[in-house]
Length: 315
Length: 241
Image (cartoon, rainbow over all chains, first blue to last red; front, side, top):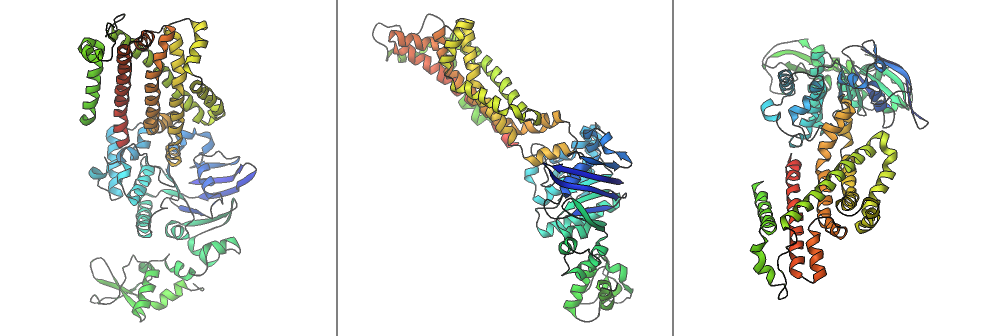
């Protein structure tokens, strides 16, 4: 749990972060979104004291961050940095083991944890562990960046544009992977991004920031349905909000029971979003699609009327 | 690696032969000598002069390295940034001031011999080490440094385990340049009585003995080439890592 109270930072007379207060309950993902220079990165960096606030305080699990020596504080908080920042002269395994070594874990424990994390992110420990970061693709480097932040099993993870500079396909796959890992481990995450889609995909709540202030904090759906006038409305974007709302819901939530043989045409899986279902339904025509599970069995159907209702203003 | 060790071995062998058994080269050196001149310098053994030359350059190199790297680290720390201009001025001055002028100033203070030459070489060798240390440390990507701090590394560990290893190839290049320049520059020490290979060259110039000049110059050149090759070895393996 992270509590931020009246956090303020000025640089050369310009207020970067202005009297900010918010709370992130345990296990929640909070996204800080806004344009460049809105103060979101500065806010994040004040949480692990890479920047010292002028005023206000940060409580992590009830403990005042200012009362902990900065190095000790940072060793307990995972930090995924914009641009990854892997140590180029160390192997992938050494990179992941950075914080465990600082914490004085013994060799065997560090090694076991490193292997576990590489496997968690779908990378073969024997193949990738000894490699230098330069031998990895961009997507693999980002994975190592996240794995390194999670190495000492921190309860809190701070992420600054963690999946930037990747192609859309790789980014979506990494976001999906990360979302699964985050839910399974129950890590509390504060994510800084300027990418609204990333925020919608990963966050439980989204805080829209402008000029050092939070203008609105809400769940993705409430932000889409009721954005405040002005900057929030402009930043969230209203053109495709019905589709964005649909992408927040899974087929399994709205499927009706049905059974039968696997059809030849379009179908959806229970874990697909309603947005994907809508797209296939438009392509197919008609008013329902079969839902098929991993074993190729029809487990239900999803109806157009339900999809339109979920995406509509009245829902 | 072995491909680079063979030429280094050849240069070292040639240097050792010329310094230790110059008689072997007498027929060749005799070609440039006037009739009746001594062909091989005989007032001091060449190996002894070469040895003192190495001691002089190595001692000055050690000081230039410690001071240059130390200053470079200091001015790239947040708290030392204000010393940047001062340190740069001091090291520039050491390089611009001709070593011979340093000798002229140092002799009245510390006397003739090893010491004034040592001081001149320290001053002369400082700039390349200092400038390359600053350039190397500044070349460490900001994201890498930010990551190290963000992981909770104490400032000393960020320097020792991240910044210096990444800057090492550039720093070593500066040290290599500084050392090979000083191997040549050390010859002027003989004008103030420092024992070294300059003595052979100066004696040759004074008595019009080209064979002396040639053997002194050859030894200095071989030493510089050998040191240059040797200091490129770790540089190679570091950039590969």
